[in-house]
Amino acid sequence: MENLSIEKFSPKKAELATLAKQYQSLEIKGINDKDGYLAVDEARKDLKSKRVEIKKTGKELRAEALKYQKDVILLENELVDIIEPLEKELLDKQDVIKQEKLIVEREILLPNRKTELAKIDINISDDELLLMSPTDFTTFLNLKKEEYYEEKERIAQEREDKIEAANAKLKYDKDIEAAKKQERINNIKEADEDKARLIKDMEEKAKIEKQDLINEQKRKDDQRIEDERLEKERIANEKERIANEKKELQSKKKYQKWLEDSGWTEKDSNNFSFQRSETEVFMFKKCATYKI
Image 1 (cartoon, rainbow, N blue to C red):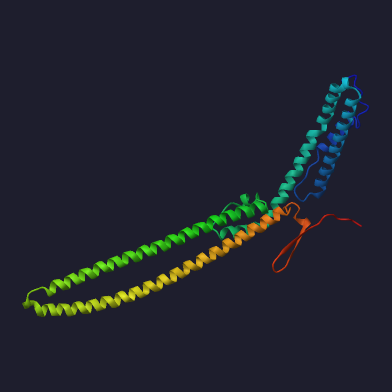
Image 2 (image 1 turned 90 degrees about the vertical axis):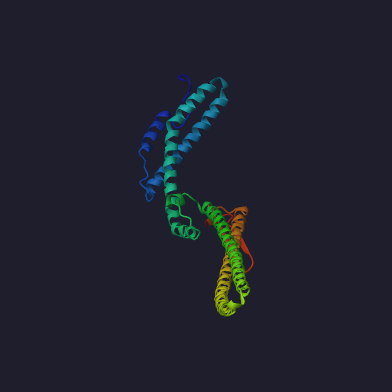
């Protein structure tokens, strides 16, 4: 290393050490510190430029004399090691601020996201929502909506099955009760003649009771039929609503896939614009900007 000429490297080792010491104290004081952010960005770019130049010089020296190759690499790495950790540290500081800015931007979306999730009985923390990009949230919401609608359909079908089972049991109970009443009447008619008056009275009473029972049962049946009609109408409306929402969800998923297949991304969404007609959506992408 002592015999290796360092003069070809620019800047020199001492200059790099001084520069590293100069940039070491740079800080970004929060997301509103634009001057601090720009200073860190300029310092990082300066360090990167010098690192690239050092690497370039090192490559040229290695090409000049193969026998010095190992010594040049050692010197190259020694110089890079002076500034590369600081370059990475400054980049990390910028990344922290960028992430904080993203979170601040996504906080605006929180109320709408929570409202959409509340519609399908989903409750997750704000921290989890802030970690989701718009695309991630859309995917998550669509998945949870599919699960929600499937559960609603299952509950509706289960309720319909219970109604049918209850109706079957009610008919069975009515048939048993009618058979018992008929059996009692038949037993009375088969009694001795000296009980004819009593039988007649009992038959008349049974007739009245039967008619009262028929009237009451008709009233109950009419009420039950009306209740079932209303319930089936409500279930049909619920199924239609769920089907419409699922259709809308599929349309949104298809639209999201079309965006992605067409090259749209959240990162460069500002480079796209859209125009709608009654039947179509047109996507336009900005190709380049010429500053006058």
